[in-house]
Image: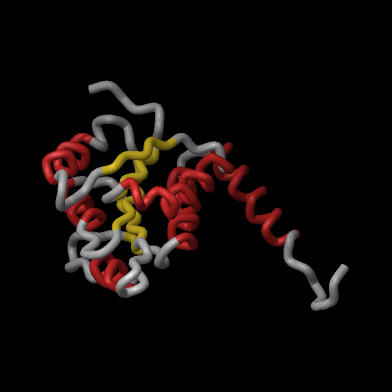
Length: 164
């Protein structure tokens, strides 16, 4: 199988999840990390999900970010089918404000790990950041970009409560 030039896969259960999941993509873009984004529904396209998860490692992916709302089975089902780290992003729902998604992702049985992030946009952004941090363990230039990112974050925090 051909290797993917992208070390990160961003998958989501529906195109409607993209407004949230694009924040993971934007974080990866800012850090110079390539990714591929795909719609892979655990419920509506289970064969696509199975094929993706079973071949992700052989295709060159190193980390999977999986966003899902409602019943939110995509992160857990993907994790059960691959040895790659899976980072789950609960998508905020109208009915239960994403708590349903959070509980579905975070309550994995022992032995099948999913790193679960915050509900919604902050979770997606941090999933991109965490994926980059995982990759940086074996990528010194990326580690340096992450260090610069953190320095810039710190520099942007005012020391006083007064307006400049």
